[in-house]
Image (tube, rainbow, N blue to C red):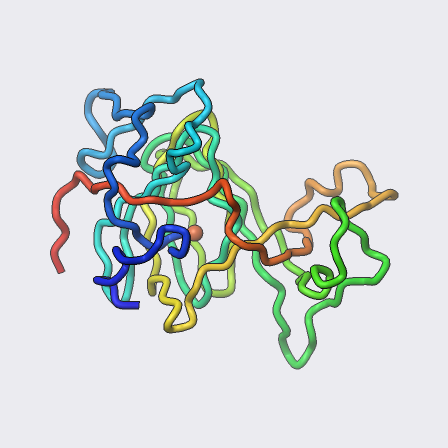
Length: 247
Ligand SMILES: [Fe+2]
């Protein structure tokens, strides 16, 4: 997809990490930048005030500051409002780096277990049930995966990295207030080149005889179901206030 054409896309059609251009009328008015003295992140991206009010339904839970993009990589900043998440999604054939600029996020990293060495991935056992129950056609689409890690990151943390085969799926939750992170993807999403964004749900298995605490042990196998983009999640653009980036 030519980068110059992205502005013409409906926001609902944009993959989760693709840019959407500024729409000032949709900027969050309840989370204005707050001055906290010298800034340690990229210039002019200031931490935003946490709010106790529920997010008005007309405002996007997540916004994206596009900084720069080439055929080789995309560079931007995601801003999550208090209590919001970027749902579980993938980055097919891509490398990525996330670095928190302010606030705290919890990142859950997963992978789909694909066929390897001529072996098919584990099939869903017929006796395996989930809560809530799945329809027959949904059961056919369930795929095995592995939840590798779940960790919290702040601006003091190192980056969170992903590769085409390791930690390629992730969910990102804002913890204890708004948060922002720098996002670099290489190469960028490009549906025309097989790099579209897919969303997933981790299914909750019914485990009547499960040992206490075993579900918390990581890494652990999970069952994944590809889903449409959630109705309550969308991402819109806002202007990047920092210095212009040149090739
Ligand atoms: Fe992502």
